[in-house]
Image 1 (cartoon, rainbow, N blue to C red):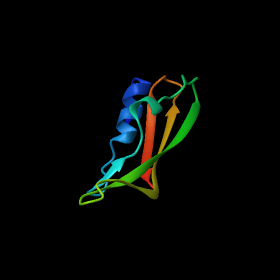
Image 2 (cartoon, rainbow, N blue to C red; image 1 turned 45 degrees about the vertical axis):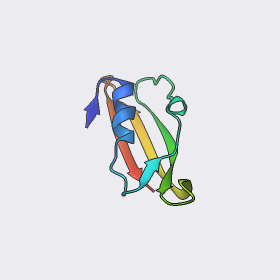
Image 3 (tube, one colour; image 1 turned 120 degrees about the vertical axis):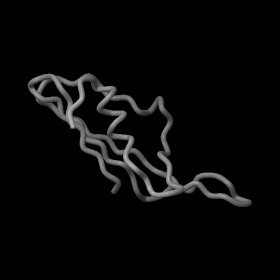
Image 4 (spheres, helix red, strand yellow; image 1 turned 180 degrees about the horizontal axis):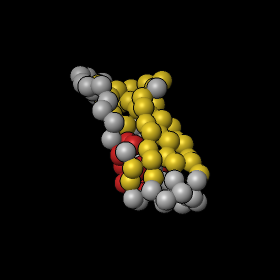
Length: 85
């Protein structure tokens, strides 16, 4: 799918469906991307954590992450690829 702005592309890349109880373990401030020139790509990894319920409520870091890659096409639109590793 193609997006007109970098913000739309990043938001779509992070909106993948995660297993139940698993959340993105990053502050919104840390989700920053640099401006991109035409025909370039950038990639980022974002950690995920399992939300625990019980006497030790909190986050348990997992060894998995969301990998997001964005490519800016010659037309100026953005293409996003994301998956859970």
